[in-house]
Image (cartoon, rainbow, N blue to C red):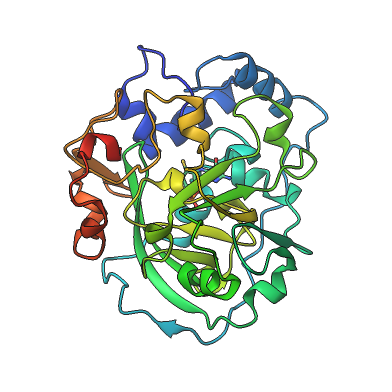
Amino acid sequence: MLIKKPDYIRESEVTDREVYLQRREFLRKAGAVTAAGVAVTAGVASQAAWWFSSDKTESPSPVPRGESLGTLIKSPYSTDEPQTPYDDITSYCNFYELGTSKSDPKDNAHFLKPKPWSVAIEGECARPGVYDLEDILKPHPLEERIYRLRCVETWSAVVPWVGFPLADLIKRFEPSSRAKYVEFVTLKDPKQMPGQRFPVLNWPYVEGLRMDEAVNPLTLLAVGLYGEVLPNQNGAPIRLVVPWKYGFKSIKSIVSIRFTEKQPLNTWQDQAAREYGFYANVNPDVDHPRWSQAKERRLGDLLKRPTLPFNGYAEQVAHLYTGMDPKKLY
Ligand code: MTE
């Protein structure tokens, strides 16, 4: 999710992981590190200055593998496609609160303290309140859901998430008939989220779903991956996963879930309404102004593959959009 891509950076450079890693390594060796591949807006430039400043730890300790989450229900919604390796999923991330390059979130993961954590349930519902994460999670058996993840930047992955249906949580808090949408908000705390010290986005990160999307059985609240507690860089301790939408809808490190009458203004639409909308359904026939969406490159693959409508989940969700203009669903 580059803020603005200068014309001289080709798509292949932006999306190809190998090229990205090689370039970063080259720059590191040359001692000429800049915010490579990222447009120089005031926010990004100052963030780059912070990131490479001398008071930052040179090599932060690696994030240890998470605690095992025990026995998990196997979901019928899982794909049997080969899973993207753990190291790729956890080191090639988009999490601007922890930095704008793909490896920053892993390198800055130690700033985020996911314990203790609470989530505010707000708005149009019978049981609003601030709940400890343990109380949010207690009634929900955890299941493994192996889903395709498709980023609007045209890379993709197959991730074995651990979580539970958002629909089950929504039912517990009894939304009223006025609740037409659900809004989600990420933690705002520049001490834990060093990227928030800079005006890269309008913090905090916000996302939203229409109520029928939120209660669709595919929509997941994830607390883990590969059978273990979610690493910080992937959105610990609790994040959304909406597999038929571009990855930016899958908001990380959630502190608020609010039932609303009005459609929430999600962060990327707020940032660049010409480029990002509210629905963000994966659609190979509707291009992003800067990227064709016809194909994608799975992390680790050399060749691109065709992108599927609704990321391959059309059977489960296409009916939610009957009669709507696909261009408006971007
Ligand atoms: N959530 C927050 N709070 N901040 C972010 O920058 N990036 C989004 C999404 N959730 C983002 C976020 C984008 S663009 C993508 S593609 C996915 O997270 C990536 O999830 P992953 O890093 O676990 O693969």
